[in-house]
Figure 1: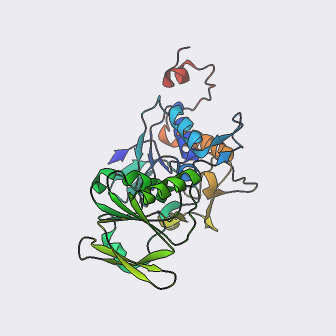
Figure 2: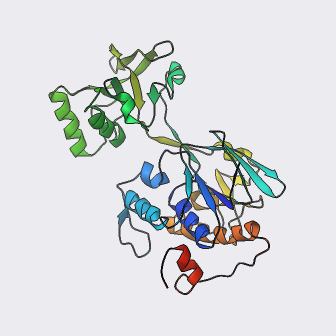
Figure 3: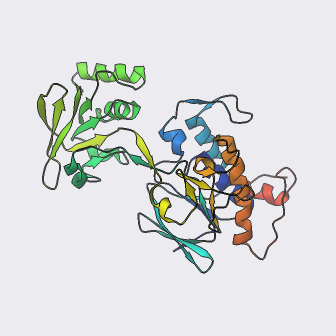
Length: 338
């Protein structure tokens, strides 16, 4: 069992800054996120989209903001548990016992929900038989590209993820790129590259097609794709990749006894604590009078929730507010000289 002063659910900007605030005041914390990478919505939904409302930063992208927050955490040793969903939260003698989808268990007095508007789940293929191939020969994200070497990979989608992986995997695999429309939504430079690769015979493009059926017993053997006008093609394939974007689900949070209203969690504005002592909600998932859904609001909420965590994690110690510019202890935690 992992014991920690605070467990943060969500590795988006709000969760990352809250981890920084917890470590700054001397508390241990770990971070769990359902996505396979750090950054939350910023990385998954708009890595290249300009953000204009970060104080003292006139403009940055979601990726730049994430990278800067990760850099800010470098002095601290924080454990991230990615591609892992929190499934169960139960009270046990003043602590919360938290269980994840991969069987990990945490014991902590503080749980901070920084999960945006819930956990991200990939949009999946419609044919029911696809489920038996999931995480074997069918994937909605790529964690180890080496498994595709020398294989035939069929990629579905018309956005940046589908196009980028079609380009990358075409270097060592036979690639079929299938999209339900004629036009692709990705960066024009990547669209042009994909079309060049098609002309040179490095990959095949099928537009106005959708997956009709996945064939095979234990392993995927082929797929049937159906054109808008009814034509069906059978393509031999070893692996199937789907990049249809994400949907946001409240998920297991709905069963934790929290005060949920319209998929948001009501909190106080002193500690950002929910109706359950020791469980806090910050960022887009929390609600209170005057709430602004801005990243800077999430930073403020996380800073106050972190200070509230100190009282439960160190009940015999008195929290004393210190400025990083004047406190030698805080400077040491940051690895700075006075």
